[in-house]
Image 1 (cartoon, rainbow, N blue to C red):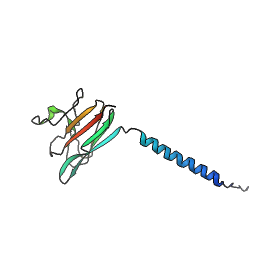
Image 2 (cartoon, rainbow, N blue to C red):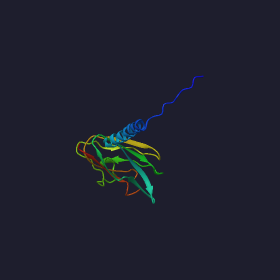
Image 3 (spheres, helix red, strand yellow):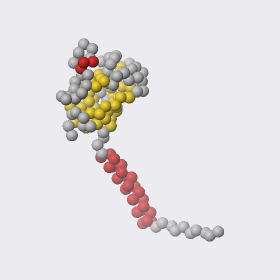
Image 4 (cartoon, rainbow, N blue to C red):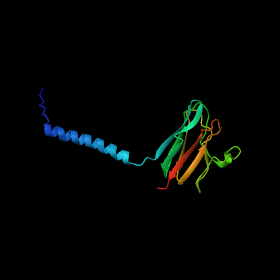
Length: 143
């Protein structure tokens, strides 16, 4: 059996290899962190017996996708349709040219996803309205 001789790496060679490896990792994470975020999540949660959206206000770039996740143990929705408000309370608000939307009832653990292409402010609410805190705002930036 032939014995293989290992060639030790020089200190300079080791430092070059280490720098290249670390540099690639840091560079990749920096590039990833600089990329604009286009996916966001809003949770429907219960805290101290109050159902609310978390965060209740979210600012996103145009074209962003928002997913609502029902983490509560009640069926809730994410609805931005003035016609679906009981008694037309004037809660829901849409930018000019935007289409009304409604997730339908989201049972615990279910998700609803919507992409926002029209800039402006959307004020949405939950059906059924079990808590006055189930009102949220999505602000879609122009650029």
